[in-house]
Structures are given as structure tokens and as C-alpha cells.
Length: 304
Image 1 (cartoon, helix red, strand yellow):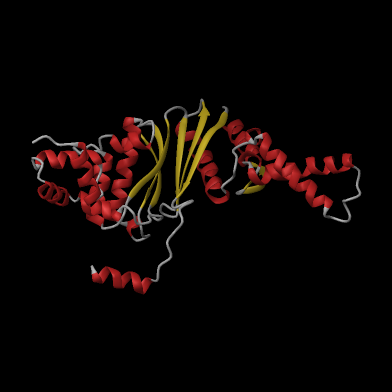
Image 2 (tube, rainbow, N blue to C red; image 1 turned 90 degrees about the vertical axis):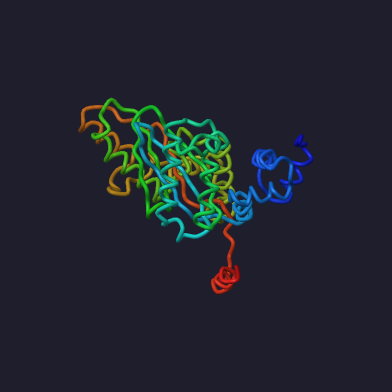
């Protein structure tokens, strides 16, 4: 029996499962809609799709160097408890390994990549939904294949940071400085790595705010414009120190900036160390969490 696009769409609307899986199920069921639904349920796909609409803002941020490739990923779950589940943690590490091996161009490519056990990452994610019983979602990833990467995981996966260094020194020699940079990034979450990255639009907005503040200050309002511009320039220096990693005070020793700290380590080791890039993932960042009464949630679980 020929499978039409209308049949596939009808099955998709009934189950919430993706087009390709619906088509496969209909083909296997020889066009029988009820049988196709049964096949999807047996595979657990229909059940996993029901959970897919639920908010997943917990989970884990994970960073590692795998076969020389620096990788950081965020995988979300619905509860903090699941974020500590051994099977979930293994899945997160497995996703990172796929990123290192396959070098996917984007999230879609990652989800379509082989997980290494006969399933794609998407199929393994669906399997995790069934096994664990929560909505689970691979959210984002980044990787570095050049230079030396140093990973850092804060608070068991609340924050994952990956620092990428350009240096002629060995990974062992620069590991400590990389870790120190990663910990500073985790703690202070700078907007920029260096003041050279601050775009003109940001500077213009900051200048505008500072000038308005002075206009509203009786002591400053009547100052000549040239004086105000000088004050603004000085305050922009403070902006850099607060918002740019390399210009920030080094947390472990506030007598120097992060930039000065890196330079001092490089000099001591007899080489050069340059911060090329860094990524900071905080689990659930930017996801609006659903607030529910705990007793009601337990009642819902018992009613299932």
C-alpha cells in the first residue's frame, strides 16, 4: 500500500512524533494507522513526545578535553535530581564525545550524528526520556580543535567553562593558568574577554548613560563638556575592569589584573600564553522556569 503525505501528517498529528519516524512506522505497518500508532508507542517515541513540551531548565553543563578536542555542552532535564542521575550524566558525556568525534556544524547536525550504539543522538535522547521519565534536551555545544583547551566544571555541572589558549608551551604547563581563567569566568561571568572586543554601540550606550547621570547630578551638571568627556573616559576604564576578563582584577590576587597574571605566568615559564577564546554555559540560562507547588507535583506523579 502506498504511503501518502496526508497519511504521514495524520499520524504525526495523532502522536506528535516527527515526520520521518511516522513514515517509517506507516511503512512497517503497511499503511495501517492503528498499527503504526502501536509501533510508535512500542518504540517509546509517542511517550517521549508527550514529555517534550515540558520545561527543562535543570540538567548539566559539562566541559572536557576528548582526544585533544575541547568540548563544552549543555543538556537539560526538568529537575535538579535528574541532573545527578548516573544514566543522565553518562548521556551528557556521550554527547560531548560525539561532538569531539564528529565535529557537527550545528545542533541539527549533532542530533543527526551517530551516538555510537546504532542510534543517533536524537534517538538516544528519546531513549533517555523513556528511561528517566523527564523531558531531556541537548541544548547547545561548542568545541575547539586548535590550541590548548582547559575545561572547568563548577558545582557539579551548574556551570561549564572551556578556555582556549594559544601557546608554544605544553598542556601540563598551562593547565593551572587555564583553570584560573576558567574559574574567574565561572565566578564573574564577564561580558567580554578583552576591551578590544567591546563594540562601538556598547561604548556609545555607556557614554550616553554616564552623561545623563552627570546631567542629573547638581554638582556635575554645570561642568564644561570637555571636563565631562574626561570624566566619562575615566569611568569607561572602570567599565572595562568590571566587564572585560583580561582587564578585571585577578580574583586570587587583586594586586594585578588577569592580563598581568597571564603575562607573569608566561614569563615564569619562558614562553607566550594568549587567551584565544572561552565559552561559559550555565544550565538553564535564559530558560523561564515553571514554578509549581511541590505537593501538587507529587500528587500529579501519583495520579499517573
